[in-house]
Length: 450
Ligand SMILES: Cc1cc2nc3c(=O)[nH]c(=O)nc-3n(C[C@H](O)[C@H](O)[C@H](O)COP(=O)(O)OP(=O)(O)OC[C@H]3O[C@@H](n4cnc5c(N)ncnc54)[C@H](O)[C@@H]3O)c2cc1C
Image 1 (cartoon, protein in one colour):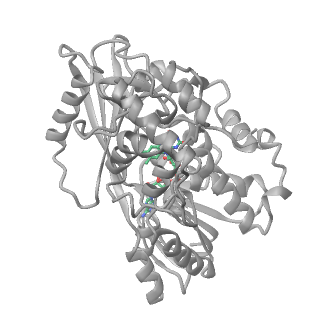
Image 2 (cartoon, helix red, strand yellow):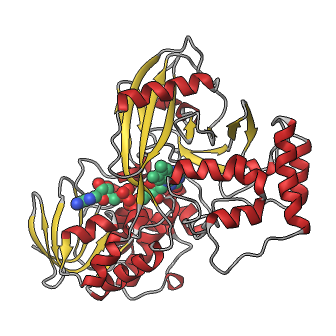
Image 3 (cartoon, rainbow, N blue to C red):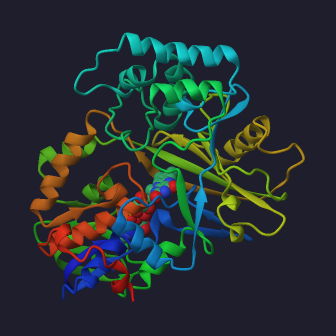
């Protein structure tokens, strides 16, 4: 078999690439090879009993005009807009997200500690080098109190990496930086202002997050399921796919995890193999539970910085859409991260998580867990240490010289969200066609969807 473009992975990045190649009337032959039995990858949804569980909370944050019209067009009539209700649980109370702008409600010594650290920075700013560590940046941006009480424990729990080794490349979009008056005001009153990139989000009314990749896949007839890539010869431009056989390709778009792609492809120069060895990540272990009580909370999700809770975040899925949990029930997702290779006893961890939810007051002692499902997300978060960016650059340069685009959250080995992933696929398609994004009919995605 021979194709002009072989796309590895039928998640949002791979589907978007194929969709945009078709939309641009490229005339190229395309094959999208997906190892799973359904499209969607991490944007998929799993059914367990009467519950629908996403791979942890998967909410649509739409910022780009094209991304927004693409998604709203794909999910026309099946998309609801929600006002975020996200919180932080610490010192036994829930305060609004983000912590740095909402210390009101914490015990007074904690509020004073946070404000004193923040104020100290105002009259004695800390000097920062050109490439500060996350730890140094956090102290300079928020002060010692906020760093010690939230930024450090929360991020240590999530990244499982010393924060002095993390860079700040990933946090720009994800961590709001309130003005001094907002920090002070938020210590005095319960300010109901929205900060950050995700003040609102959209979510499908029916079918969970899976509705999005399904809508895209319906427009990608080139998708082939149960077609796992096992080997790629970059010199001969031949890939081996289970259930398909050998495929010769001119261009290859990879969306599987960069580390795994390097492992099953070659030949690679020693510098690329060395760069691969420098990639770091943490796995996300996602517990989803169904509870036999309606409306256990009116919140969307809660962050847990304290070590006495095994999870860093818990969310209420059934508050995103009614069809995710049967009538009279609620559903929750709980997120725990672990370093790769760590032994995880899911039964024991589930017991600790449910106990933690009870101690935090999110579940009552009398609440019964009626359904549960673990979803493991290998390399859920790639670690942004000082090695990450040069290593990814070295690998990407080599792959590109062999006609390979490696894109998406894991293909590009980055921290990103679904809209960006869809745009990554579009950009790859345009680059393959030798066009730049600005030259396309970027304001007309809906016409192409018909
Ligand atoms: C914990 C967590 C929470 C998140 N929350 C949000 C959120 O709230 N909002 C948001 O917008 N984004 C969120 N994201 C990000 C979102 O999941 C990604 O942006 C998006 O799903 C990435 O899609 P992708 O196509 O790049 O990767 P994937 O979805 O991983 O797709 C890659 C595909 O490749 C396939 N594949 C792998 N190996 C092979 C092989 N050998 N052969 C063939 N196929 C293969 C996989 O099965 C998969 O389908 C979250 C991510 C995580 C980890």
